[in-house]
Length: 465
Figure 1 (cartoon, rainbow, N blue to C red):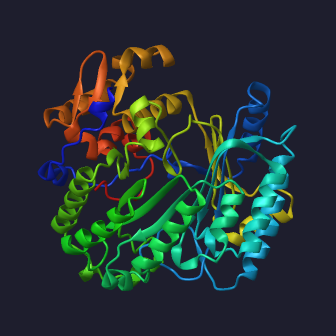
Figure 2 (cartoon, rainbow, N blue to C red; figure 1 turned 180 degrees about the vertical axis):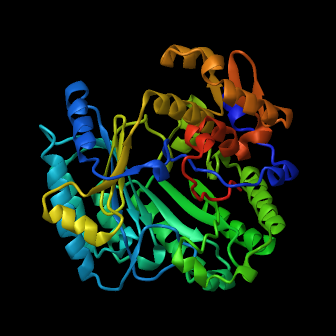
């Protein structure tokens, strides 16, 4: 698809409202809720051995999960631990070192890393000494390439003096700032009071240091939000001109996430108001020159994310959209998910279970999945739709040695009904998401999800919009 076509998007509120529903975000396929409980260490070790034999010098992606926060944002659905005790982070780093040693021992030499991401929780929960210790640990066991993309999630309220300079010294060049909304009443309702001036100070310092890409996270659908609060938030955010903006839909699932029980349901905006806020935000961002990347991501045209979209090299991983070619991921820390070759492996979600496995000198894995050939084929189809808004059928058939219409006969039949509504166009050579269908890309990808169709297990997913 041409870049000009990819940048086109039509916001059809009526159509979006008609297709309102829930669905996976497809940061992986199969999705993490399909992972099987039990020992996956053997499959993970086998995947690492195969990688060593086939492509020992191929760069890795590295993720480290820091689960701690000293306050809880009521909307949050992340795996986190609320505490004000910084000494708990020292203990956590002790166990991270054990996990790093176990991983490093499985490689003949220090693996090359082209992507590093610190997430949470709140990575800036760490003191500067603790953060420096973590980064020294990583540098001792992995080789960060000179042009590696190193990013971190920043909570401006929990940023120590000198932290950004420390990160920049260690090669960090990207950051993502949690903002969500700038209205004081909304912030109070979700227990995240964060003055705009504080966020602006962090952005200014990062740019002076030389960080080359800054992302801001926003959420629509929070309690007490309205089109007026959204307009005011966007006006301020656009003055900062972040390189990327992630605009997430708030998923209210209090039965699953305890902090959300503190949100008054009566304070949540109606479905119509939520849709109006999304429409307002999209139109505002596009008018300000941002490119719609897909799902909930926007970027300035000169940003690498927008350039990857235009080149046809856009990727998707557990952190969302990414710029580099799909590569194996080693994920460290409680609840973190790795993918090596065909194998997904997730660490224990409970901190004590994570610690106890490492005390036994075992990889702290709790569940996972090794993809079948069918999983890989479907993963590729979903990826093409979400990252390039199309499937080139002849190229796909050649890559996977299948006859597309026969292999995906049920899926094509489902897509025909979406085509009637103008979400997608189909012919013998390609399936293309239309500008009208781009906001519903998850709906268009879902027919290719065999696990959803067979419904052997029932999962709760976030709203598509």
